Image 1 (spheres, rainbow, N blue to C red):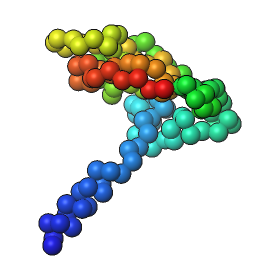
Image 2 (cartoon, rainbow, N blue to C red; image 1 turned 120 degrees about the vertical axis):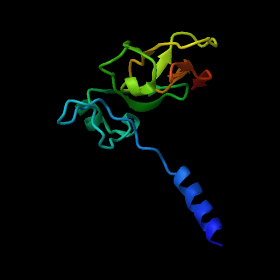
Image 3 (cartoon, one colour; image 1 turned 90 degrees about the vertical axis):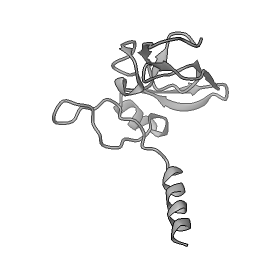
Length: 128
C-alpha cells in the first residue's frame, strides 16, 4: 500500500503547475529574482503598464493579454536560463552540434519557433 501512495504523491507533484519565469527584476545581490512572479499574460491593464507591458490582442483568436518586452531581447544564448523569456533558435531546421539562439523579444506566446536548450534545438512548434 505504501509504494502506491508514494507513487500517487510523485504523480501529483509532477502534475503541479510550474512557477512562472521571473520578469528580470534583480534581487539584492544583482542576480535575477527567484521570487515567484505572476505570468505577464494574467496581468490586468494597470499591472501590465506597471510591468512595462502593453495590453494587446495576441494569436489567431485575438485574446487581449499583457505583452511585456524583455530587456535581454536579441542577446545570444544557449539555454532558456540565459534569458528572461526563452532562448529561440534562429532557424527551425535540425542542427548538428552545439548551437546558440537569441533571447526572445517579449512575452507574446504566439508564432512558430524552436527553443534552444542546453545548446540543442528543441522540436519546432507553432502556437496560435
